[in-house]
Amino acid sequence: MLVCNCRGINEKQVKVAVRAGATHWADVHAHFGTEPSCGKCACEIKQAIADDFCQKERTDPSIILGRPVAPMTA
Image 1: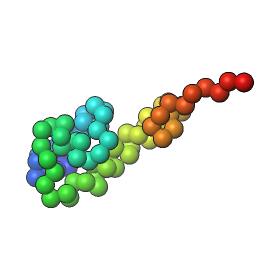
Image 2: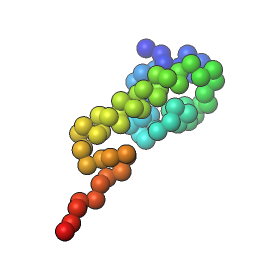
Image 3: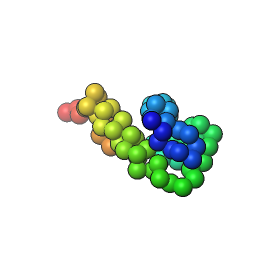
Image 4: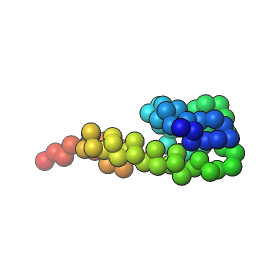
């Protein structure tokens, strides 16, 4: 399904860009060499970025606020 009608970016492409490191909705566009146009895709792309972050947190609980936590030493 298309996420960005203006630039023809679909759900799978959004996931690819996010997994490649996109952390802002404009980064997703930049990943494909485009720029945002009308902005209607912003919410859906931001949600994909948030979902990816939450998934990473669930699989690696040492990640807090996007940074690995150093082990505590006595």
